[in-house]
Length: 187
Image (cartoon, rainbow, N blue to C red; front, side, top):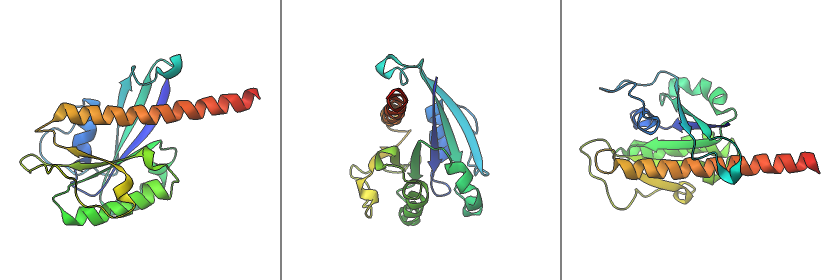
């Protein structure tokens, strides 16, 4: 079974744990806000994602829900090791988050030499906040990333579908990489 490690990162109180729980269908942490202390790892098995090209019997996604408090910055290098994708979650209603996500992108995507296609930007709207049809104005290079508007109150299935499309793209990259590696061994 193919395995993919996806990091959920971003500022504190952005909604990373809520989204990781939703996508993995975990009821863990339901209730009021409790900041993630360091890291939580959730697993999601997706038989439909690993079947590309008839190889494998599905995919096991490890969703690494990383605490957003800067006091955990010393742990970041260990979290980043062998990551296949990065989901940057922010609250578009908080101006400070728009600036902070530039740092998260720099550390977790650019410095790790991941492709922009391996990154998903999520503007997560808390219950009761209005979802704007246009996304927030983002500085370069963030404005080149895939951005989804997330409101679990208004359109939970659309959010789930967007995550599954993103996960599928990561699995396709892994399959392509594995195929290239196999071909290099054969030739």
